[in-house]
Length: 276
Image 1 (cartoon, one colour):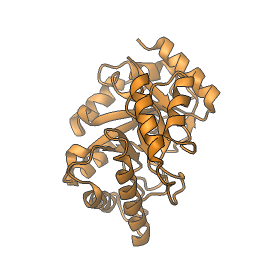
Image 2: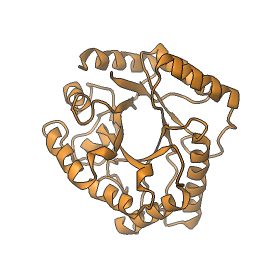
Image 3: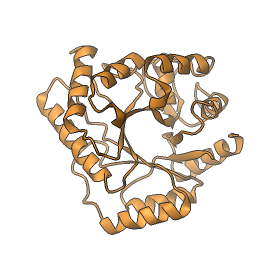
Image 4: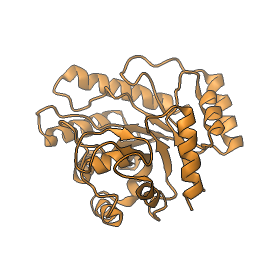
């Protein structure tokens, strides 16, 4: 069965997100743990969490994906920014234990002229300081487009981070179709080659989720501009080939296209109709 959802607002709680997901034909969803620009998270409503867990079990809502704020940068040149990232992520992961067994995704960060090697070391150090042995959440490194000094636009950089983290079984990867294309990976004409390369460097077993986005820019642009499905340079057919690939078809897929609920519902219906 296709596991598909989109990014939803968490402002009204977990149960509301679950009901909203079902209303648009989704069976999973993604959400920000707090304001995407950072800040303090709302207090958890334990009654809402309990109601969500019951509702999800009754309605077949699968693994959900929490997304860290964009402002987190665990490899900033500024120690205060690195500290903020570590404290925020640690708080997010403690909160995630109220909905055990789910996923937490983050952008690795930008090294800001310190060099990728220094950035990789700082990101790994941050993860080593906040992951713990019996946590139930899997933390995902997202594949990045490579704009500016982003870390994680190459599979080799992701592997270098994983290699430095002690609790490797708590880590996975979230592929992003727009980011992959913008970073120069040819998922349109050579998807098998891209996945073979990923397997040789990181390992296909690390892929735990996929962001489904078209791209406003040509491959290799390193710009990171998401587009609606079928309206960008990747195209619907290439996205469907990825979604039905034997290595990926059982993963949960999350739309991050520039849409409101009505647009997400249409994209989900389209992809469900053509997915087989």
